[in-house]
Every structure is written in structure tokens, then in C-alpha cells.
Length: 170
Image 1 (tube, rainbow, N blue to C red):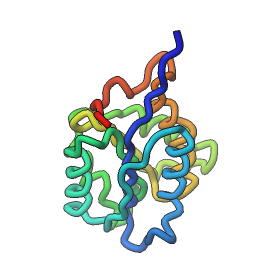
Image 2 (cartoon, rainbow, N blue to C red):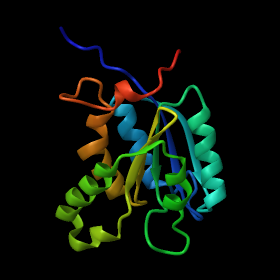
Image 3 (cartoon, rainbow, N blue to C red):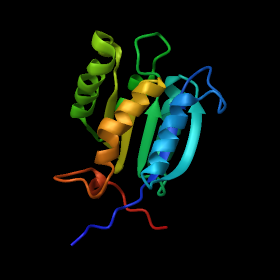
Image 4 (cartoon, rainbow, N blue to C red):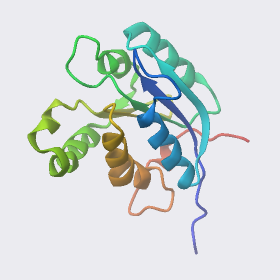
């Protein structure tokens, strides 16, 4: 028996004080990849790198009955304006520690020891999975291609996160 592939409702949030829809290359990578995988983009936004604006936007998405996953890009470095971790981690019901570890391991092959400056992380809140990636297009491609795509693919074995996400009635 072949499992029916589940198309997820996914939001993309770019964290940036300077990007616009025209210059948001990282968000564009995620939008293109999720569409190519058969998922649906249900929301796209660019939010200033401010703890409270980020937390408000993601809280609204977590509470939205039509959102199953959130892909975030940006704000994961070590500058004073990198607030994604501080804003989002308190919202998690459960953290997915292995995501950041695996992302840095894979990224090491591409950028060497600079990968230690990535604070990529993930978790689940209100049955919505949230992946937080660095703000570069390359990091978004690595994260999607090497980890996220399989974990959001209902046919990926031995396990994936699809059965742990809220069910959306369309």
C-alpha cells in the first residue's frame, strides 16, 4: 500500500530590518522549495528583528487553524539584532534539539567552522512545527534540502513530523 502524500499549509517568515519582498532571497528559496515539494504557501511575511514583533507574528501563526508549519529565516546569529532565538524558543511546547545539531553538521561541509555561528533551531508549538534557519539563501537551501524536506514528507520512513502536526480542514 502506498501512503498518500500530505500537502502541508506552510508559512514563511523572514526576520530582517532591511529586506523587502524584492530583496528577500532567503524567503524566496523557502517558498520555491516548499512549492516544488507539493506544499502550500499559506502566509509570507517579513518581520523586523524585534523580540516582541517576532513573538506576536509567530504566536498569531501558531494559533491560526490553517497553519501546520512555519519556516523562519534570519535573526539566528550573534549580533545585538539577532533576536529570533529569544523571541521564539519560549513559545515551544517541545524543542527539537537534533535539528540545530544536524544543520550545523551538514553546514560544516559547506562553510567549515563558521557553522558554529549558526544558532539554527526548531520546535513544536500548538502542533505547529517551526524551523528557524540563518538568513542566507545557502543556509535555507541546505536546511530544506538536507533535513526539512524529508521531515515534512509524509512518505519519509522510518519517521517524519507530519503525523504530529495539527490537521487542517480545507
